[in-house]
Image 1 (cartoon, rainbow, N blue to C red):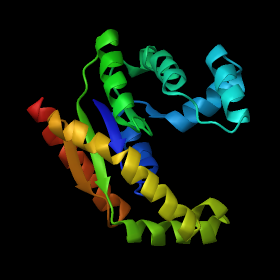
Image 2: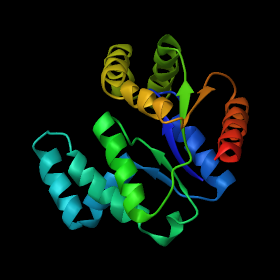
Image 3: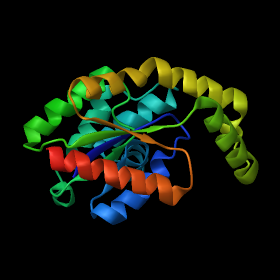
Image 4: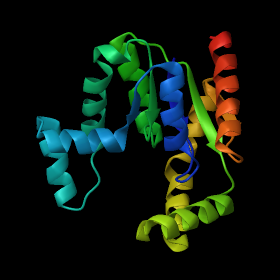
Amino acid sequence: MRLVLLGAPGSGKGTQAARLKEHLHVPHISTGDLLRAEVAAGTPLGLQAKAVMDRGDLVSDEILLGMLEDRLSREDTRAGFILDGYPRNLAQAAALDALLAKLGQTFDAAVQLEVDNEQIVERLAGRAKAEGRADDSPESVRHRLKVYDQQTAPVIGFYRDHGQLTVVDGVGPLDEVFARIVAAIGKADAAA
């Protein structure tokens, strides 16, 4: 099973991806974690990314795609993977399709966790208070949601147009949301 998890910051993607990893026995690939690992390891792409980040710029799609190609070429992804944090824009969605074709892998489904923006603000405000995270202030969260709507939301349309989108209600107890995702990907797998 090869999945992309989509959803606004705070929609529960990371939490559910960790659970899906255990359920499906495939790696959870977070592009943020991948980027940090490449930088820490001092790989050529990691060094390029570090130079970009040290300037305060965003890492290019080309560098991220290179890291992703390396990761998806490893043996543990042969049975599938869960992508979290990529693609974030239409160019990345098209690049992912091309990369999977190059690697001879098929794509099963994009799962969108749907959560109302105000519920996300409340959720992350609780996390900010519990963990002392300044980046989860209501103002910061609303800004990230606006950026998400502008840049990443069109990716949802991309996967919808390709018949690969499954929308799951991301509100409720973790076990209920997880059960909805498992049921949704079971239907997507049966349709493939």
